[in-house]
Length: 301
Image 1 (cartoon, one colour):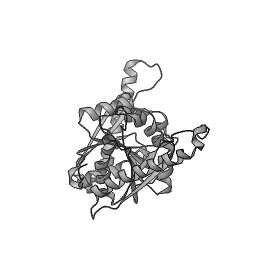
Image 2: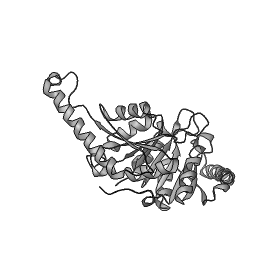
Image 3: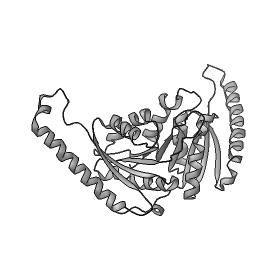
Image 4: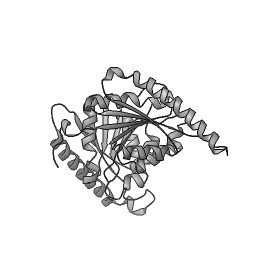
């Protein structure tokens, strides 16, 4: 378990998908702050579409072209608002499916972090509940940071980042970006290990005395594991605490985040299974949907 130092991890190219709405723009400030700290460039991408009506292809293409012109004007105006940041901001437009276009752009431009708002044009979170964000999380070639805007205000991390770990080397790959982002916003770090229930409350075996002994033993092992990581990562510039909990993984992660004033959850896309237990097993998706704070999914395939 090697020690992680702040300069050892950097994002170099950050992508911010936009749709012209103020809610989507909430991802810009955190993206620019990360880029300024890490000397990265920011790519702003707007995907435009034609009408869903069965129009003449020529007319539909004219609509797409007009929307692309408007998108380019919007992106240039947005870039001017961040000129004081003194970072490279690259603007682009494309047409097609939002999720596929964003993923293709990330691959083409060698993006290693996507920062996007959980809310787009619809106040009902069209991107998340319309599955665009979920598709990006599943298929993006890089880490994805989902920002939760509060009304029309950026909800920037201010206090604490939580890193869920399950004891596997794959889950520990979330540590480097967590430490890096903690440095960007001067956050405390909380390491968390959640033990899923061994048996349901309805299972007769759960009432046996040895059941409590097993749970106590597992909790001791979890705490010892977290303390080892805490010792390895300890340094003057970081405040690192450890917590253990038991219960259904996704619900417990969200509950612990709420109880501990967590502003940012950083978790690996892969855990114990090595085949995407957290992400494809829907834990990450449930956390994304239910958490009230920003969530970074670290890609480790």
